[in-house]
Length: 188
Image (cartoon, rainbow, N blue to C red; front, side, top):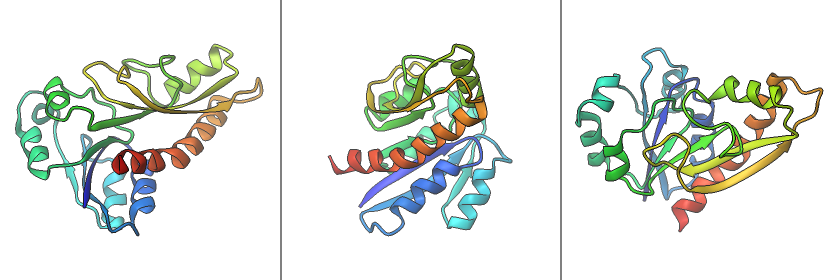
């Protein structure tokens, strides 16, 4: 049995997509979803999907080993960042080498780093007249968006595309590829 732990900060649409992808797979289980926002919509999704959701504060994440100890006790095969906005502390990266995977809404190394998430990325893509964008699924290291790239998928950007259109195209790529890539990592 492969165990996945997910981290999310927002609505949890990627969490739900991943849960639905693996729901009929007896070899994979989502052990828990962790969120750093008490009012995150991902908690409602987890309740509906019957997945354990745990809220944590920033101090337990970055200034103590409390959360790290809980995670170690769960013995996850993969930790998936599905719309999680905090930087992963070095002690987590050290404890789980090549086991923490993130999805970024751009073709890294472009539009990565602190503050580059969600609509900030899509606005930057539009403002720089990019002709393509996409997603990057990568391992997490101690720096924002700099871990080894596992998979990228592209979509075209036209002059007529608004940042909202770009976001829709990128979300479609996330939903299509993220669960499949997770599945491939677990199978290797």
